[in-house]
Image 1 (cartoon, one colour):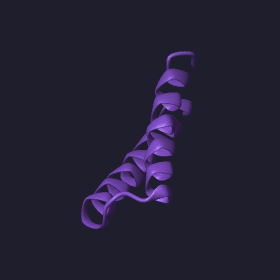
Image 2 (image 1 turned 90 degrees about the vertical axis):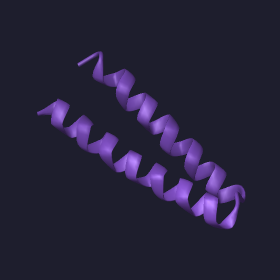
Image 3 (image 1 turned 30 degrees about the horizontal axis):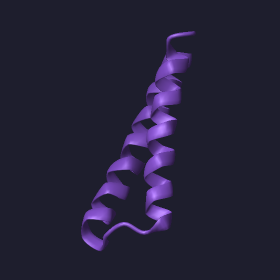
Image 4 (image 1 turned 180 degrees about the vertical axis):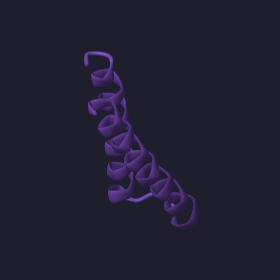
Length: 54
């Protein structure tokens, strides 16, 4: 059950990352988009690392 939850979190974070990337390509990077990109990448890394300890 925990693994399915982690997979769902990763899918959501990847969707957010892809949305931020497409928006950044279209409009250029501003401060909030850089923060959004970094938070989604950090979130993906944290979930992947925590999945090894379950």
